[in-house]
Amino acid sequence: MNAFSRRQFLKLLGATSAFAAVPPIVRAATTAPRVVIVGGGFAGATLAKYLKLWGGNVDVTLVDANASHYSCILSNLVVTGALSMSRITLSYDGLRTKYAVRVLKDTAVAVDPVGHSVTLAGGAVLPYDRLVLAPGIDFVTLPGWDPNLTPHAWQAGPQTTLLKNQLAAMPAGGTFVLTVPKAPYRCPPGPYERACVVADYVKRRKPGSKVIVLDANPGITAEPHNFGIAFSQTYAGIIDYQPNATVTGIDSARKEIFTTVGNFAASVLNYIPNQRAGRIVRDAGLAIDASGNWAPVDVLNYASTLYSDIHVLGDSNSSGQPKSGHMASSQAKVCADAMLRAFAGSAPYPAPVTNSACYSPITASTASWLTAAYQYDPVSRSMKLVPAAFGEAAGPTSGNYEEMFKWADNIFADSFK
Image (cartoon, rainbow, N blue to C red; front, top):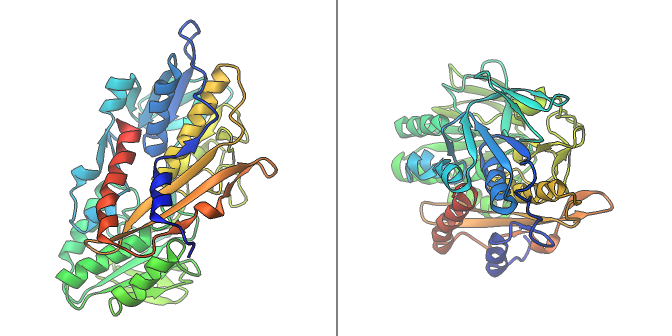
């Protein structure tokens, strides 16, 4: 474990990205450049806000299928009933009223990179000068999986409520089976965090129950110190952690899952599939990394390597940075800065810094944290981890649990208010 102090961690929370200066304002005398953003999560919402906050005369349209955004941050506490869905439901009203962002409840179904337009499911065609795709993740599915029977709850909203209800209905002595997808996936600590809070819940409310964690990776991918202790000590006899457990099949109707380390029957089966870029990114032909799952980008401005006027933010790109809400917001600020500079005839800032920080509840009253910072490397033209800014908490504390809500509220406000 890197010896990283709480003081350093709190300092990084306030610095999601670094620039040489405030980007040039797009003057009102010019024709307002048109920016269309597909996806209203932390990447899309942050970009929309900061383009207007920093840019002045920019025409910004945000397209999302939902009337509000359901945050994955804190959603595991909704699963256990510690929080309500309203606590993680974030409105777009602030973007509309305070920043004059045009918000459309619709789904983008096609991109025309030659004609510079996006077609929506409702029939509208939106022309753009710059297009930003921030749709989050999609799943690599298996035959036999029905998410209405065995939910993933990895896209917050109705799936979160479904898993919450299944957990509440699980009998004492039941078995909760959770899968961890093969990295990279959204929110590296998230599955282990969920295992912990569910184990805490069943320990208090469902005596004799077990939590089986089937991890497709060779070991715990994030916060190995804190989650390792939680699995082996805090929840000894409750959590059964199985690494190298590749899922080979699933029968949602019977709540059975088949893996390379054995087959498991569940009272509640929380299957989190392997992941890839959102469909609109794939349909646009941008997911061309070695795996064919993610979109390569220029990390100075997050433009696709295929089209300089199409940007891919957050979970869907292959930048090598964590797929998290905080990181999505950090990338969005780099993108906003670069885009406004481009509109003003300037090159992107040449030395961006991004970071990702998060708190993870371990019990009903304690939490740990994790942070990582990335600096642009001009030789490899990539974002490189800064070793001195990478680490996890020495252990979970009640103070961290209280700070977790402040951290979440700050991120919510930074993106949506």
